[in-house]
Image (cartoon, rainbow, N blue to C red):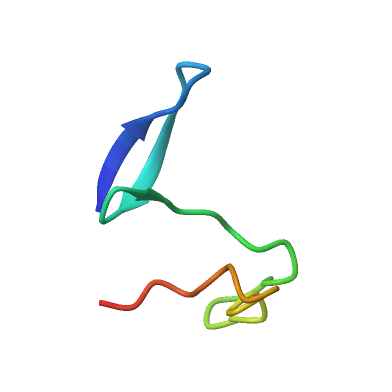
Length: 46
């Protein structure tokens, strides 16, 4: 895990250099409804 600087100057968490996002439908710990959404978004796996 690292912190990257976005184009607008704000900072964001990243994993292996890729930005980390929250999925709007995941509301509690352990929710993974966004995993493989549109074959693009994936849960972080070590």
